[in-house]
Length: 440
Image 1 (cartoon, one colour):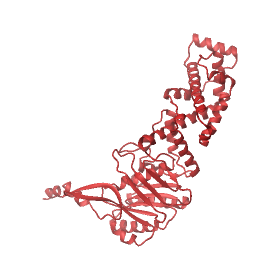
Image 2 (cartoon, one colour):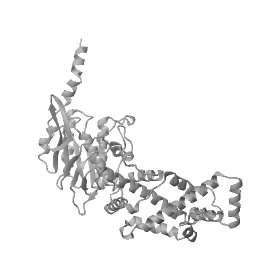
Image 3 (tube, rainbow, N blue to C red):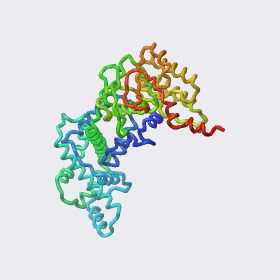
Image 4 (cartoon, helix red, strand yellow):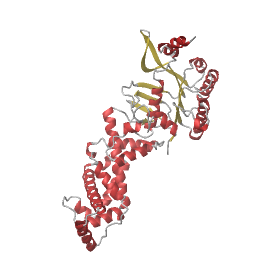
């Protein structure tokens, strides 16, 4: 079952494109092949909400850490094989006389097409040989289910009588063998060979994720085995920040809303993005930039962090916010278990409307028990009303003044921030002094 996520959320979290730094895709793309990079991109476009499938993917990544299941993949070798299998030229004839003709004709009049066929066959044989050796090292009970099925398919290919003789041999291919193998690879076993190549790319992706996890010390998501709805993050960081500060956060069973406060520049938006990225990566079954993460399986993720004005549609910022909230409500009605992040609701309207709307929306969301919400706001005045409601917990990012300058720890704490830096920033930037100089 798919996991609902939209383009605005992808953009908010910088999954595939990021104007301020590396995208999450580029951070995770440590693949060795072009096919592996393309497969990783497809996988990251298809997060999942099936716990069994997610846990199987986690097992598969961990299995690729197994020293006995290690294989060096050659970018150019795989590129040659990929090109060969998608070659739109007719297969070489399997007739011995035609094979001799093709051989001598190529000697006299070398052609790029014939060269590509020979090179593709030779590289594919080398790859099959490498995997044949690899399979003999691996104990079948240790294999993830998906690997076991794919290995059986490859073994089926290797049962061919000609391949049985060629795989252990290092002798150059004869013309009859080239023509036979071209028919075998691009005609008789074409589907199986393409499945094998996709399996190789999958090994590339999963192996690179395992190496990334080991290098960075990142954890794998753990999903509740029952209907528990609590969420915990330990030592969570944003993977795109060069010197990140880690944070712990816990949303218990009875809490539906985390209401987050703190002054500008204290770290609220970066933290919300880190949480959104962690929830997204968990629903890929990928390593998460944290020491530990435990959560239920959600059916979707929707964020509103950097909402742009839709000027081409004639929409104001406030109306864009309203449409975004309406879309969020629709997703909640359709899917039930959704993780939602709102960063500074209602920036595009007057203070009174923004205050009242934030209070009302937050109050309503606190009564939706199957989903979880993180909402940041500067309106600390509404917390007195929100405290009266069940299902809301308060966290904040602190700011301390040292020598009359703000110092940020970027650490999340329980409670509510009363700190305001707006006027301080205006004064330090000498806005008022400059304006005074302009007054006649």
